[in-house]
Image (cartoon, one colour):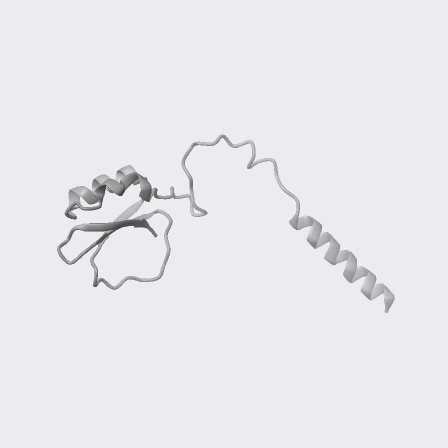
Length: 108
């Protein structure tokens, strides 16, 4: 019976120590200055497109904001639009009021 506890403790110690190990591969990569998510897409930067607040939403404004924010996808959301709770760090959202004017910019 003591051997069972000893071997279980040894296996547990190996598992815990293996989780603490790190590889030098990630630290030798050069920093490209663009944050990427786990899926490999770049993250959007909502602060870079705050200039869109107060402007009327249009396809041209959406494309310009998408490029400036570094987002993979972008969409215009009205105040009564139904959206999912799915969060995507590479997606830009231009939220509008009833008149179609952008009142908030966020990623997700």
